[in-house]
Image (cartoon, rainbow, N blue to C red; front, side):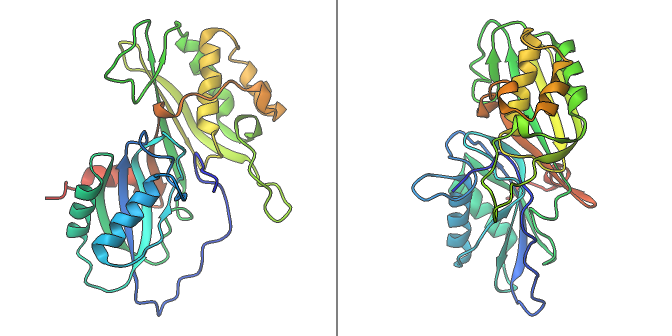
Length: 287
């Protein structure tokens, strides 16, 4: 089973059966990706989706199938991942479900909130955008307190050049140069065209650099490849103007190396009238 850094376009979601008595449940989930081999269930390895599925099934006494907004890769974290599943019965106690999952899955996985949604809502297909955050600790000295959540780069980085390099990413492009090309589906290559609406670096002080990128969706390893290429710009190995040429080349060898996975976090997922990060902060912690 292939693990994806983010959601790719795929077949249309199944049509809901109005006679189906099951409820559709939406969870907003945070997790530390370090102990897991990605999100997607994969026999023989421990994954976020596998652990979460087992915990839900244990609590409600039913087998469930999870759909997530973005299937994060091995070692990648999430602050506000969105998952949906169907559960039969109308007496599901969501407070108990949330509390029980958190006790079973702590400290690596936490459910921030749960609610019943319409059957037409799908964590993957209903999403309009995904937002990722990447952290870099740019200092000659490593920081043990950020070692599991930020890429330590000891060479001095020229941040203004990295900021300029982001300009080429904005808009709709074929990002083949930054992605692992997926397997063919029905003899046709999947499109790697994505629409990036925001890509920006922030200096948070004391060597802490924060990269924010938002797009309709992402292809496999796209964010880590973009970050690796922009860090090469900061090192002086590439110029900001080279990014457009890399994109147009559609040549994976023209981009930089992948940034390490532990610096990457799926930060938010957006839906019409709703965003997972806003809802996450609005939910009280389970008691």
